[in-house]
Amino acid sequence: MTLAVNGSQTNGMRVNGLLVNKNGESNGRPKAAFWIPRFLFYGVLFLVGLAGCETNTNVEIHKFDGRTMGTTYHVSVVGLPMGFESPQLATLIDDSLQSINQLMSTYIADSEVSRFGRMAPDRWFDVSADTYNVLKASQELSRISAGAFDVTVGPVVALWGFGPQYTLDKVPSQKEIDRAKESTGFEYLWVNSEALSIKKTRSLEIDLSAIAKGYAVDDLVAELKRLGVLSALVEVGGEIRGYGKKPNGDEWKIAIERPVEGVRSIHKTISLVDRAVATSGDYRNYFEADGVRYSHTIDPNSGYPIRHRLASVSVIHESAMYADGWATSLMVLGAEKGFRLAEKNDIAAYFIVREDGSFTERQTELFKSYVN
Image (cartoon, rainbow, N blue to C red; front, side, top):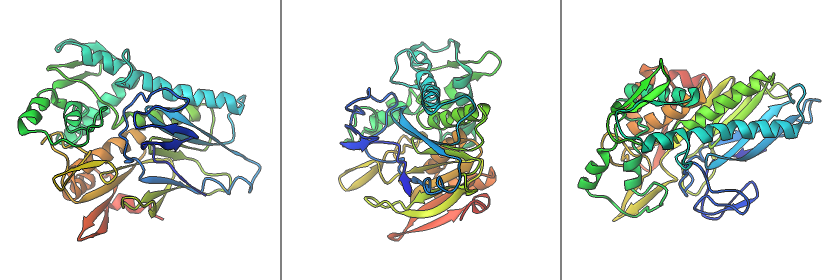
């Protein structure tokens, strides 16, 4: 069995039996708390072979799924922790994910990031340890990537029509881009490790959608381990982390999708042994104007959508949060700059590059050890 885990919705797509419209509204669930574009762009990973092994041993794989952060989640747990029935674990999983959403969603008015966004500059703002950890990692990635990763880039993303209004048909002027960039810049965001507080030195808002889902995966994995779960696979919005093995001794298998529009096919299969994987791609969310294709991935430095040949990049890391952030960073940088940065920082990364109507692949030395 192969299960697709695209982690986003289209106009009228069915997710877990619910009909979801382009606004993230369903026939039984509230509107998405994190914004996810209507075109699929997290659909670049597949869970492979989750079924079939359950009949080989007496240990059962328990599967849980639902919605969080404007997307879906899938969790497979080998055996139940001591003292838990399946409904109890389902509630714990959902509560764990929703707690991160409550802190970091830009759609929740009293979330930490929303309240910080409404604050005036030059004032310290206390945050939870969870939000601090995500922002600390974000700022680290921003510095390493020279701004290719930037959680303050939201105004420019919205200007290009990839924000909550879905206006994917307008090319902004240079003047509009420059004005939007005046409200961005990771260097204007300060993080205080001693007091767990943050400050902005200019008008800024924070959008953690490129890293918070990975953190939610890590947080849930830590909770499952604390409960004594020896093996599990956790996926939120396409960010995946697995540890332990399936009951028959097999490793968790993940397949990277071939980046072709309208086609769902496996390009390469990897094993996740106490590791996470995240993929960023530009081929499922874009708009075209005057014959030019504009990707949803915005370069924070230029204020323009990326225009290079890199179709997708997958990153394997011990942390889903860092895999998530690194995948975005490398996607912005492109095949050449991204590859050099990944090798320099010993990152397991796999690049799929457009080349004369076809695709070529390139992988860092560390990534090769995970390939099946």
